[in-house]
Image (cartoon, rainbow, N blue to C red):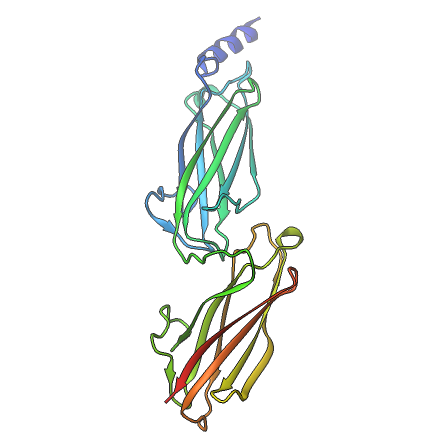
Length: 276
């Protein structure tokens, strides 16, 4: 009889039956687990977003039991999920010393290495397994990086010449000297996806003189073939050509031909450059 009296007293003192609606509080996105809120800060593609929230007004059972199940998923600016839904389960028993405890649910999602810039959304919910009450919400975080315009068909965008691999701004005038290294960057978009967002994209490179003579050609200069949960929105291309010391001054034409094996598509882009 004493034991029953003690249990009843204990349950009455826990925050079990408040009658208030299940509530999510302190939803936070940060750069490290349990770190400071990201706020107006930004992540970059490839970084991990750490997410957490706490729960109030959950039921505590007669013996102090707590049963909560949460779900978290992140989406890019176009509404495409960047990770599979994450399920977090909390099943525990509280003691009297824990009566002010707020369960904390944690999750994380890596921003894909190739992903658009913009506002990403984290959607989350929690269900109380004892009352079946549910609460949900969403929060946002910013990702900095490039934005490459999509296309309904295969196309090469942003073809440019550069002095060095790490330069971000293309040359206003593509002019080099004999012996220089020519860096070229571009993006391929508009390819089709296979099963599990598979892609199979390659490109050829060719250089011709002003009279049309082909001076250099390489098929399958690079191949991007993979599959992933997140559909890769574009394929970045980058390569270099070294001009021989015997290269004569004049005008030259670079031709890049992209191939989409899954969509059976081909697209080309041409860009002139000079050797002075």
